[in-house]
Image (cartoon, rainbow, N blue to C red):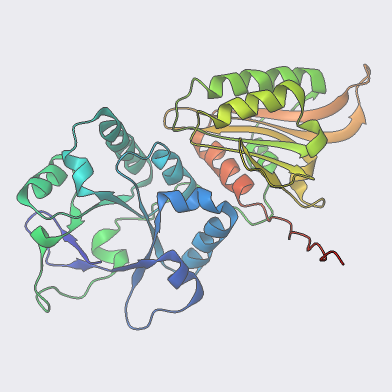
Length: 336
């Protein structure tokens, strides 16, 4: 895929080649610059693998592009997690009149204002597509209506004509970062027994259902036997209505329905944390608590906790949680 400026190809440049994320993560691209491309649905298909590949291609100096679906309910959440340099949108979505497409495009504009990402319209195959892209303030696109004859366009650089400045606003945390470390930085830590945290978690989990279907909800419960009773029922209910729901704890097996039950290693720092992380199109909140491994005067387990509504911090905490390394499944020997 090549991309050109939409407004009459004013500068005559052709943007760098766009290649699959897996290609750029594992092999060099000789002789030209490139942008790593992934579809928004890939992020939640295998979060730790995809997020680590994104980090790998960025370390090698490549930019990242995310292609969003025409009416993907979690598109804006994916953008907050990945913070791509380029967002690819289908030209058909630009001429659609449905409310979901309009909402996605408005959210996209808000995201680009925060991060300086560049939007690229894909499939600009008619004057109607071209005019719609310009009406949405989109300056770059690809398609037959923007065809540039081979040799007419000059050399390009993804760091030149396309990218105006670095686009991701959140620092990339190291692989061992856990939500509490991210969310507690610069914030007052409060000590509390388990009872208050249970009530606060339940309140946040109830709000998740009101935040909209584009919301993702991530919970960390330390050990699988903590994920029981009313909490389990609330998270099962959330899985029916939200874009992505995942629960992390030591000892989980595979789940075939409901939330994604994610096992974590016993030595992972996440084991010492209790987190409820909600990230949506217009709502972001996280409760993060660190187990102090002692009891209060009343005999409750004692924690240190923070609450944050800072969207950038919540997105970083969500990214850190989704990136957790997963235990290698044990091989079961065949029965004799």
